[in-house]
Amino acid sequence: MSGLTSLLTAAVEVLETAEPKAKAAAAAVAGDLRDAGAPLGAPSALPDRPARPARPELVPPGEVPRRRLGSPEGRAALLHAIAHIEFNAIDLAFDMAARFAREIEAAGLDGTAFARDWISVGGEEARHFRMIEARLADLDCRYGDLPAHDGLWEAAESTSHDALARLAVAPLILEARGLDVTPDMIERLNSAGDNASAAALEVIYREEVGHVACGKRWFDALCAARGLQPEETFKSLRNRHFRGQLKPPFNHEARAKAGLSQGFYEPIGN
Image 1 (spheres, rainbow, N blue to C red):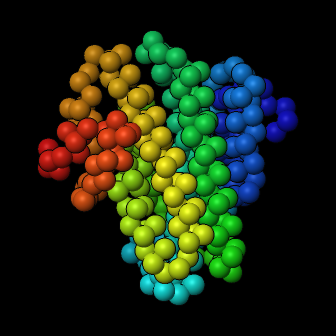
Image 2 (cartoon, rainbow, N blue to C red):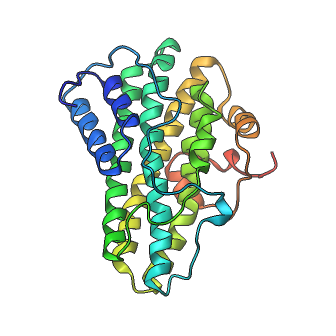
Image 3 (cartoon, rainbow, N blue to C red):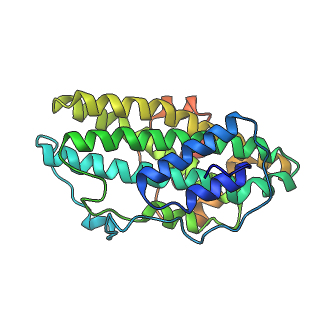
């Protein structure tokens, strides 16, 4: 990894690294290159799917264990699911940088700034993963001990052809959903007496607002470059590329902080 000299090659290195701790370390190397002012670099071949460890076993969403938070096992199940989300989020951010920076440049925007932004997001996702991994260890559990599902990456695969579609689905739908549900998880963990896990989720929640804001800023910029109206374009892309439904209740305050007006997600059927 020490021979990496550009943002794009560093981003691809993250995607090609399977072991969780090594993937987080590769994200840190990419962040160091970003901070050092490394150039964007030449496009690199991207893997069809990011490299992943042999565990966790990937199962349909309904087979992922859910338990009451009153027991250590129940809290471990929740935190394992969160760790899996954060692990996927590392790859989503670095795939965003590596896959679409040149497309952003072709639209007349700053591809280097785009890559730098998503490398920064990916570094925060890696830190979130490590935080939750540490809490799992305190509960005598490791990432990979429980099954998980592949829904996040399946959503990404349907948008690999277009930066605007990926921005709509990944930050503006999937991560925005995190803003809606995380405060309730924090409250439930505090009620169960697991203040340390709740504190970790508080950090994640605050920083995810910035991730959604980053997605919204680039979505708006790319819409402008293509002569498109953002709200209507988002709804069209949502209907074409997102299989699920937007689920209320929505965290209007956090979404507003991220720049998402209610017209982006209400009324739901539009």
